[in-house]
Length: 132
Image (cartoon, rainbow, N blue to C red):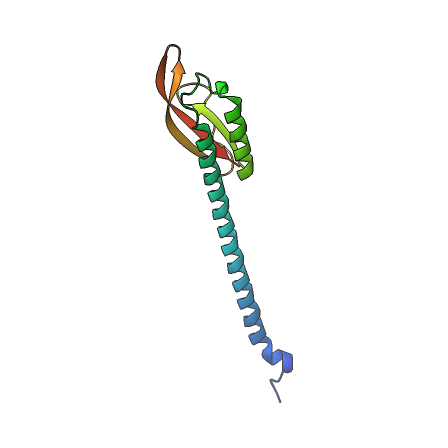
């Protein structure tokens, strides 16, 4: 009868392996769900940026300064950005200040546009930055 530890002692190695396998399974499941949610957040920022860009690009010819955009467009862009939970900045690449694409999940969209410049129109690049 030497070596008999008891009913729990004999099953201890099996119980230990079962507990370790449960821990491994649930940690892998947690990692997978975390990665999936991160990808969904990235897609929301991209979709929000595209929708904000669509609203802003409704303007035919852009004003000399970005602050000259019609209030209806800036209001609609703000509402669209809020519905996706993102913030946005607009700016021309040829003039200061340029938008700073900083923050969590920052994405910049560049568009070739025509803007007013005195008596004639010039081609410029409009940058739309979206971030959380």
